[in-house]
Image (cartoon, rainbow, N blue to C red; front, side, top):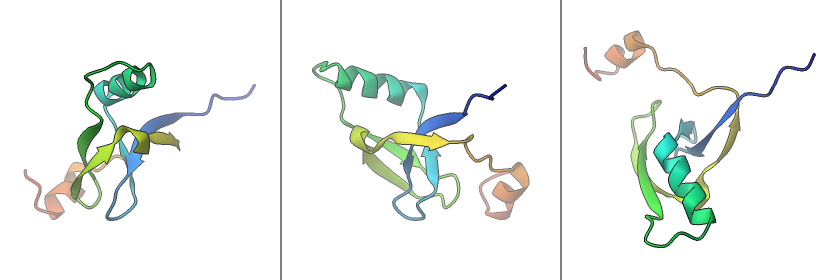
Length: 84
C-alpha cells in the first residue's frame, strides 16, 4: 500500500529561505483570486518561525512543500528570547 504524500502550502522566507506555512485563510484568498474574485487582497504578511523575519508576500509566491511544517520547540524559542 502506498502512503499518501503529505504536504502543505507556504512561502519561502526571503531571509533564510525556510518554508513558512500559510493559514487556511490565505489559502482561501488564493483560491478566490484564482477564480477571479474582485476586491481581494493580493498580498499578506508572514513571519518565519526559524529566523523571526517578517515580510510581505504576494499570493503568487505560495507554493506546495512536501512533508509537514517545521515545529519550533518551546525550549528553542526560549533560547532565542521569544517569551516564556
